[in-house]
Image 1 (cartoon, rainbow, N blue to C red):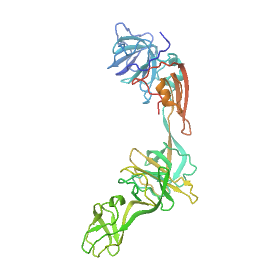
Image 2 (spheres, rainbow, N blue to C red):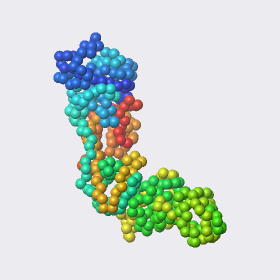
Image 3 (cartoon, rainbow, N blue to C red):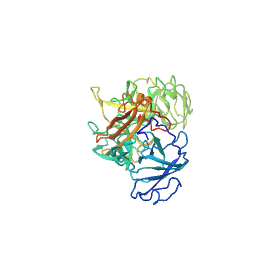
Image 4 (cartoon, helix red, strand yellow):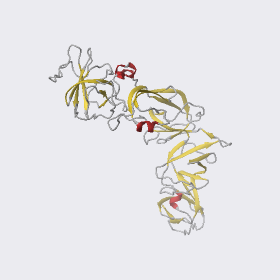
Length: 431
């Protein structure tokens, strides 16, 4: 029986359940007996029977005696250990020679993976599933202070004491006892409401709390566009006589200004009127105007309007993401917001100015696993923390107390002929 082979792409269809035995109640492989002390129970323990469902043990392209069977899915966090196959009784029944490489967790209806990785790793306690540590979440010592009120559904949170904090992207912001994943520290990322064309100076967005005209900028590519107005945009009325409810807007593209139903249009002598319909070059108001407005200036008001100092050079799709930042008088960026969301959802509970905001950090625990790495995996991992050579590679991963990913690679067997594919654990695991 060879100590290792080259195949990490052995058919692993179906699921498995393990029935454990003690040394004096060993299963009779020849008669395919099912004697034992019950499914998923350790007793004294030298060997165990594996019951398959939808499996093809022993078939061409499937597992053979001497292969390693791994229980669970390492990439999905369900891996509970490995063992060497010492007997195959049928397409749905095999025996493993030892349970020393298993974590002790129940194995029932789990996915599995078969490979020809080095057998000695099973007896190496550092590669055992018992050495894996569950992921956890730690509450950070930093407590944020809300610089302004935050409404329900908002994904950008203004934090007044953000400078020099320990907060990082992928940390968690806690709102109403719910964890929201942080995607940006320092800048506000918000949803665009309605498509925005190249050259537009007006955007409709879910305005970040505390956004200011004059000090804040829209960041787009390598350019920064100064915010010069909030909540309103201006233009000029065409011919609009007394008694009409149609107000034409001359020389302007209404869609580009992002005028919408339920905005308000203000003209001299007619005050503020609610817009009830929008066309390409005019708006309809909810009541007729009492005074002619031909050639007069108008203002459209809405809380979501952001006016820029010049037209944008890139278009935004509806529901796209706009990024805002703040600069000090010297042009240096000032960390102002934390952007955090849960899927597409923003804050579940409103935040008042001065409220304390708690942050947490996800700790990945500890994992050590043997991967079959072929030339393709080497290429993908190049210049990353997973960079390594071909062969059977032991990889240890964890996150330190700063939340930084740590990866240690050890080439256990250098081999250029490793076969990987759909049945392999993908390497590198997180790229």
